[in-house]
Length: 317
Ligand SMILES: *[C@@H]1O[C@H](CO)[C@@H](O)[C@H](O)[C@H]1NC(C)=O
Ligand SMILES: *[C@@H]1O[C@H](CO)[C@@H](O)[C@H](O)[C@H]1NC(C)=O
Image (cartoon, rainbow, N blue to C red; front, side, top):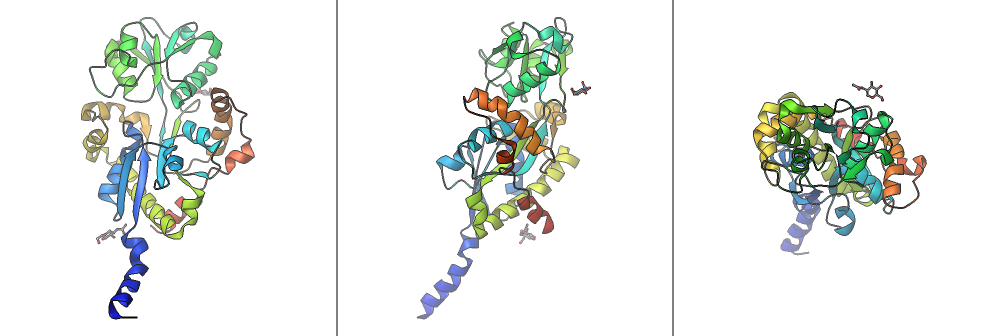
């Protein structure tokens, strides 16, 4: 071996590290993805690219290593991709239903009314669970679809606009759409319904069994979880440091003031909740119905959750 070749072969030993780059797919218009950006900028020494997408990206683009979404999309994709793994919970969010308190005093008052949500997503499931908790079945209210709004003015077809113009009597969605819906009718007129026990979004980071089986890829993923752990500690304990950056990270960007207003709705847990498997097993019957398939068994769904990556990340901190 000549000198150049031996230098190259020594360099090759380090290639898994020097070349290493993580690719993450996330919905860049939701608040829950923002810790990924700050983790990349503040605490992760490797290279990370973050692209718009979500769990389906793991299966449409093999260069995607990690993807974030709520539990609904995980259930949908696991049905046809048993190699999907949930490895970390970034945020738990007790979604809110907002209505005009001059007309609606309780969830029970929403019987027979039009409720804005998006079926087949965490929003539709959330509304169904909340109404069920008040003894109202899906046949006793009308779901109306609309779109989210990240900053005022919220135009035609967005949920805040629909609430303001009587096209919906309530909105059940993620933030800041609900906050902006309240502002659209005048915050003083708004009543909110929220119950962490009945429903909270569990916003997770996912990968595949194959990525985890690849030693150097797994090491990168573990290192990124460590960076996320540090980021979420800041999100929890020193939010003043990150409101503005998290707001600016959204696409399109949100105002810092709105971000501050909806911050308390989000719990930046950074864990894998103990009840995740049981939540998934109950929720799968909703997703199965929307997707016109059989529900997956609790035993099958258990295979989607892998706590070992977080254990490994924490062991090295
Ligand atoms: C990242 O690099 C800095 C500077 O070299 C170092 O101090 C720090 O410990 C590294 N962090 C991690 C998580 O490896
Ligand atoms: C939330 O829902 C649970 C279960 O239905 C109920 O026991 C609890 O009282 C509710 N909490 C609030 C604040 O309404």
